[in-house]
Length: 400
Image 1 (tube, helix red, strand yellow):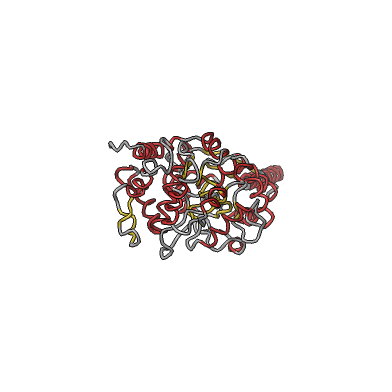
Image 2 (cartoon, rainbow, N blue to C red):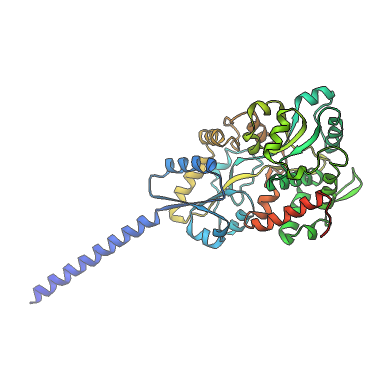
């Protein structure tokens, strides 16, 4: 009887140990499921990212697409290992949960890229594209300063039907225009102040008269209202056409194909959607700045990744991050997305992408997100309301 009891107890003990081992194995496997979140990213960006991640991890992967309704920083930090999005206020909200970026990544990047809370790996850009034919006919050089830029627009009145034009109906493009003008007039600190004010108040009329900088060149304080008044004067001065703030991509294509736009404002990504034959007639550059004495950044929205991985997945996450900024994969990502790489040595998709990388590298404060991403990434309704007020003001309706 005693022998039977001993045997039974031994069997039970073995079963307990085996069960614990199996349980531990299952838990271990579950812990190794690598979870990746994509927040409001386009398929042409997500798909090559997935390919790179799959190549770097042969374990179980879970990819989730997140939208505004899904955004909760605490829950995202707890659930996911990597978070991909455009750099902006969603990334800022995840900053306190982010893990360090591997030092090896820094060695591959242009030095001006900020890697504090996330790793940027692709750059878009808000550009001015000058019609070469009109520029040559005018005998003017491309503008070297903001004052030169305004003089250039006036000179274009003798060359084209529309000196300045943009896809004003696109909210992000219109906010991009405000972004580059604020940065050009006030530098990095003034632009950051504007972003901070919009994030604090969120309402156009609570922000518009607050000073974001002072220009000794112009002898005036710079406010959002000052910037808006300058843009509102385009139509009365025949620098653009009526209702340009509601112009569509089709409108841009029509006038650009007829070589009737002297200066076209666009993002690099929208530039890519245009007919290549049309865009060959234009030369792109950044918005000229008012004063080089100010510290300046480049309004170049970045696709970035936040490392949220737990200690058990640190090695996996770091391998993926390093792979994202490798020479080979940076060229691959640039080719697939037609955006600019941040790797300092790799081949870029074309001269436009290479130029954006160069502009970001020489900007003292590096690339910075536009207002749309810096202020409204997680509140699209607020963005829509803000842009509606901008359009009303620029159309001459100043009623609050």
